[in-house]
Length: 114
Image (cartoon, rainbow, N blue to C red; front, top):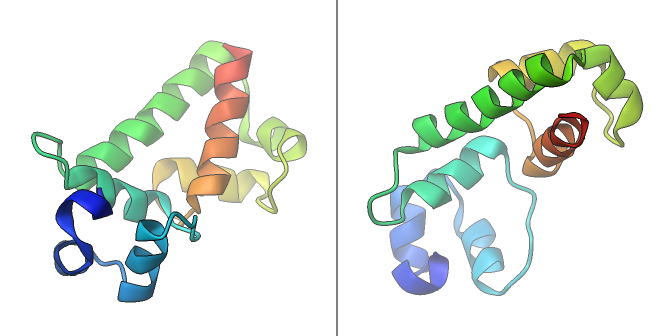
């Protein structure tokens, strides 16, 4: 995305700082929140807005938790993050800023149980 649009455009269109955007352009993997990653994805032509992308991601996890019949305390015990059950619940509901890595771990666990 950054290669296509350029650093200046991405910085202007998102809440990301220049260092983070330049790191992404260089092929590094700076720590991003789910919301920041959604901002990047929303820059693609025809993509939904960042809020819709983030909420759809969260909804996918919530629906998966229902299907897999798994609770947040179980997820907290089973994944390698420093989040407890309450924080996982808040992350999935969008009330706690969550790194993309943490969110991916939650989603991967839930998806594996479905």
